Structures are given as C-alpha cells and as structure tokens.
Length: 106
Image (cartoon, rainbow, N blue to C red; front, side):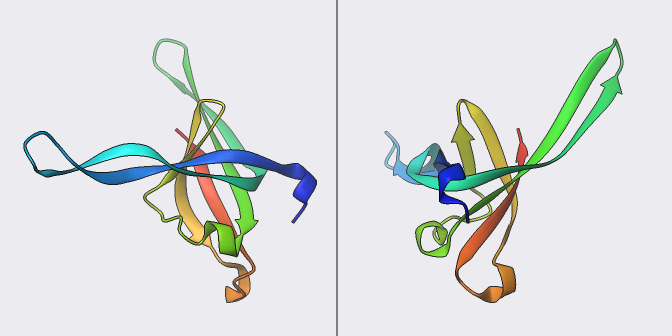
C-alpha cells in the first residue's frame, strides 16, 4: 500500500436512533473517517433520450485491515461531496492485511 497516495474518506451508514415516538429508526449519518488508497477502475458513458448522457465510474479503495474491518457492504464513502456505494469487499488471500472495497459513484 502506498501511504503517500492515501486519501481521507468519510464512512457513512444507517445508524439506529430513537425517534420522537420512541421507535427505533435508521438514519444515515457519518460513522468515522478513514484513510484509503483511491484507484479509479472503469468508466462508461451511455446515451439516453433527449441527448442525455449518463456516466458510470467505479473505483477501488484499499486500506489496512485493522482500521477498516468494521466497514460492511451496506455502508458508503463520501469524499468531496461524491458518494461511493460499496458493491463488494475483498480480503485478498484471506491474509487480514488489507481490505479492498469496490465502489460505484452514486
């Protein structure tokens, strides 16, 4: 992992809160900030009706296992106002040294 290339990202997820009716509710909120290596992977552009173009980009984030093991599939990252939804998480060779998060820009 290249430490000089690591970026600070916010980890967001649905956190359980009690609402005004004393019911359990899940609201999106920031959980923690972590440093991850950000690697752009693929991009695609498609055309829709009315000369509308839609782009889809995917990124891979790599981080240390010990600092990222709490992150689950239903969470997402935010950096500079851009939301990255986690598609799947990979633990290479089950070595518990680093985690790879494959994400798509929302």
